[in-house]
Image (cartoon, rainbow over all chains, first blue to last red):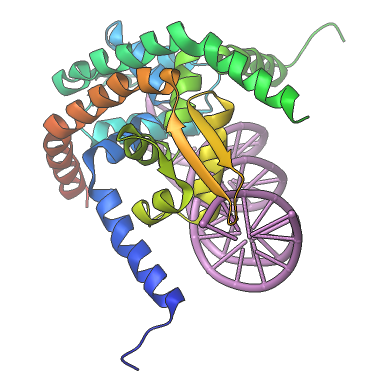
Length: 133
Length: 133
DNA sequence: CCGCATCCGTCCCGATACTG
DNA sequence: CAGTATCGGGACGGATGCGG
């Protein structure tokens, strides 16, 4: 011992890298907003508070499970506020917090770039695909 | 027949929604830049062209497979250019295309927001977790 | 040096059924 | 109305070995 194999050194390097990677704010944010349903939910809530059922109908593509999990995650991160009104039947509202609203310009930047450049990406993709079958 | 069950109607609604979802430029872009290694690779290439081996060493956390797949995906989308120099041994360089460079401000916006607000997210998360064990 | 092929574990996500 | 519980398929991502 005292010496390590190349594989061990690579593994160690990877682990320490993973730690720094996980600590990087930008990566963590992308992990969050890259979640499949976050963008749509945030966009929907940008128009004001919504009840759970309203979201479920507006975002028909998401299963109940994914919608709930997405909302829970956003709530945990302080981007969305969940308000329970005890009544019969129960009423639950979701709304963006100030922190969540501060994220909207970033989402808009992403959205705008996508609108303007998606055609170029599609072209590049098509050419790439035809070039190599 | 002629009538459909509620389950069928829901399934249909979900499918048509999925199609619109997949067609939305912003979602497609997030799908791309949300990929685990895209952000780091783009950031690395922002500093100029890099050889494959340089990228592999700089991004020690990614396996060879993921690095190659990420680069291929970016190349397919026209965000990265791949240049092969026939020699012995072969030399391969990767660089951002103009389209890829136009994405940098967007990535910066994400990065800046993350830098400024990640602490708030961490606080919210900690409070949420302690509140409900 | 650069990358592909293969195998394999994990975890995301959807479908379904049940609760208060 | 607003969830929770559980199960299963399939994609994602990592390790390893071979090929040009």
